[in-house]
Length: 278
Image 1 (cartoon, rainbow, N blue to C red):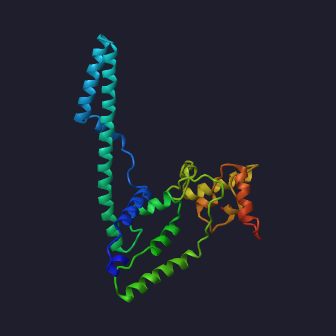
Image 2: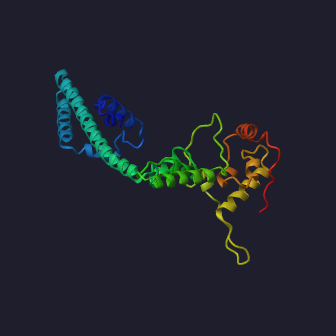
Image 3: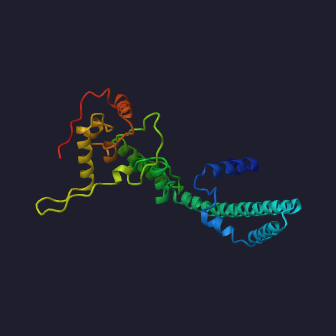
């Protein structure tokens, strides 16, 4: 853009380097063929013909196992493997080229819409791969925007929307992961694998309503904290009703991890969060 504004020629080598780097960073860009694509290559006419010649030579070697026949069989085997590799590279280039064309259209439409996070796919990537909560995704959605109009009123509206989102996010209690823990993918609904598998609730009774899944999860976590000698859940986080459910019921892999979390996050607390009554 600076070259266009200043009337200079664009730096093609720099732009190509940036393009290659952005393609390498993009995790959605296909790097390997799927099992279906690899299976389709085995039906390619070139590979079928190479395989046929190799098998015919293998049958001839059974009748005449001489050194010359074995050498020819090894040569045909290498040619068959090289043919499959060449077809695989060609298909991978084709798949990447199609992805780049489609992704370029998506990026252009995203810039024209004025929002970097404008679809559910982008939000899912942030929640699963980057382990972001819905409040953090909404914050990024309002901050990472582009101007779509040259009017001053539109810029004020864009600024006011970002300021309002930041003000709402200030009330959100943010907590980062502990040091030394392995990164794991967060589920799309905010619960880990153990919390997704809720116990089957009791049969419906006419006198009391059926408890929700979150209530069952909280009761299960409370009973665990009360009975466990070395609990792997933090009672202080559980007692904080302002935290999300998956934070209050988070279960650590080891008891030492719970102690480390308590020292770093709650040791300076001036009050104790009592266990809520259900």
